[in-house]
Image 1 (cartoon, rainbow, N blue to C red):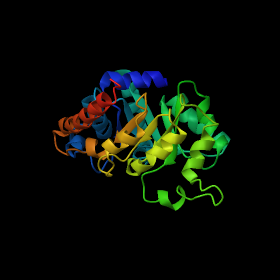
Image 2 (image 1 turned 90 degrees about the vertical axis):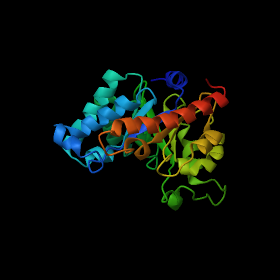
Image 3 (image 1 turned 60 degrees about the vertical axis):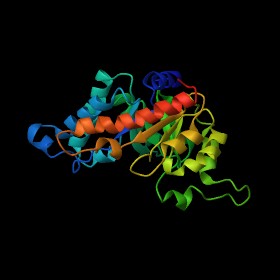
Image 4 (image 1 turned 90 degrees about the horizontal axis):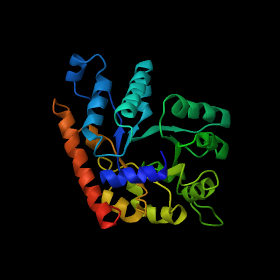
Length: 278
């Protein structure tokens, strides 16, 4: 998917919502285990069907699938295939946080882009250029590079300053990675709980898309993210996971999920109209 196609989807759906499929086997409604042979996939399918017209992207977090062994991988493959077949306009992100020496990264890229048909994969930048560029060799595919994360541990390293220049480590990552890819194949992960940093980030990467997790349960503000992060092509994919997919653990879970997604989409529509992007 191209940058323009992604923006057109945002305009058409009046939404820049990404739904995180962080499907925890211990949190999905218990009745699914009695009624379905593959309850995790059935949960994902219901969530997708309930939200597909309200969002432009899905982001399965691989940890939740890998923890189940081969069964989890099979569910993940079925989930991606279902989205591709049923809602082909969706942008699908593998939240995998990969990044290793070049030949290993090439195998990860083959996994997610060659075999599983994701549009993007989250990649850690701290092993440098050769750990990232193998993911950039696939036409129409994207790297979502970790820039500034929403967790408490982000302060351990990402804000460290260069003694001579005063440049913070996340700023160094942004500036250096501009030599690796473009705003057509690289976006950046910036936590919503760091919204006040978006002005500094936009000064370095004004045209790139930002994948922003942390809105909702983690406490990030959509209004603040949009205030500092929006650009002329929207430039934002804002992810919400737990607040949406675990809105209910009863038989009405899909309807409850839709209600939560509608709340976010309605706010996003207002933001896009205010910015004259729709």
